[in-house]
Image 1 (tube, rainbow, N blue to C red):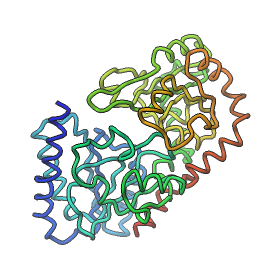
Image 2 (tube, one colour; image 1 turned 90 degrees about the vertical axis):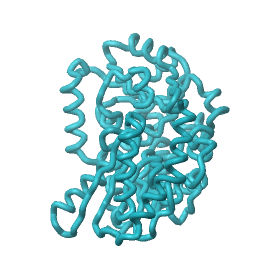
Image 3 (cartoon, rainbow, N blue to C red; image 1 turned 135 degrees about the horizontal axis):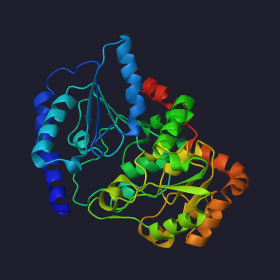
Image 4 (cartoon, rainbow, N blue to C red; image 1 turned 180 degrees about the horizontal axis):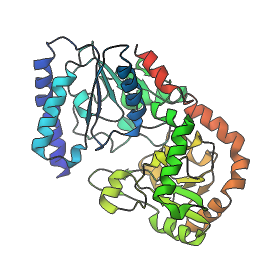
Length: 375
């Protein structure tokens, strides 16, 4: 079934979508037409929400004429007929849009060479550098994929200059199209009202967490959409049981993993939990860099590190990261218990790490991106 879906994607990519685009691209670009598009969520992902809210406020002010259309849906949950109609509608609109914002791989945008009058902005969904991605990784881009998945990007916006060369190579786009102006999503983390509202929402939904220290486990996605893998659950739950009741553990598996396993015990978005957590436990997830912006303790829990190094690999020296590295239940328990005091030991190195890999994330990324694209 997975292979059939890949061939269907290739048909859409190489034949149907380019045909629809060419039919409508002969019409003038509609000035002020702005699209937000994503194929992996049923609701607008946080990675593009800050930009969306900013542009909506601008449109409401009436300074400039803007028409904002949202094409956010989970392709994997759609019937073939619904997907066909959705793609037809998107390509018609894409062919006449002035601006398109995406934050992840999005096949329709890559399906044909876009007209030069359309600006495609890849807001990207992760900060910093961690595991290998895209063409550097084995599973990210299907081997039978034909075309340039990232060739239509006008701009790719990243969290620091340290990330530019790696992404240029991994995504096979020129460095001249990449700007280290920050990740729009991270502006939320510098917004005290937003943080307060998120904390209040968490404790309202989970009042049993009040008075306890909060440990947030957010592991990376492993495997592929057809067969996702979760590693370390048994050891993690055992550690949580031993640290109870002083600690309250939030388990947040990747959404694609949760669709198969229903492991998560909290329905709130991971990024909206960072402000409430006292310590983040993760393995190879880039959420680590989001959490660094709060300057709070991180514990690495990577029971399959040797295997992951061989099969996937990293852009960084994982073992030299300035965080406690644990690989079993006993190590994890001690690291969580001592996370406060250990954090002070790592503080200077942690600050340097944050500046190196997320230095452009300072609460003003969205406005810099808008200046970059002339809005």
